[in-house]
Length: 133
Image (cartoon, rainbow, N blue to C red; front, side, top):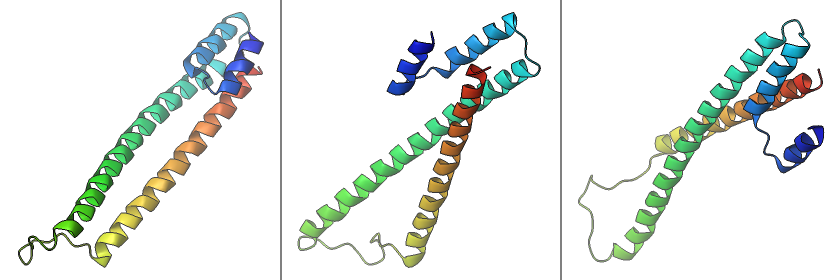
């Protein structure tokens, strides 16, 4: 069993739910004070982390798609500038404020990403502690 966990850990494909169920089974044999509560808390944190990660991954994917569309439109506009011009006031130009807002949003998302990564590392550490009990 330990060798399987080590191999899975090297591949990076540990199933946290399986580990938590194993820890619960161990508690049935040898009860440690507070272990069941910690397992429940870890399970909740893991689910929350997965949901949050999925949310931000979807958001990043959507923004990447928007960026690709914006870049495509920008590149296509260069070729068509001679053919037709946009009426005054309808052009989509970015202002300094637009750029600042985008940069701030990118910084916020990077901070969220780092926070999520730290939470996942803490969960891994907690799971490692449970496995060593």
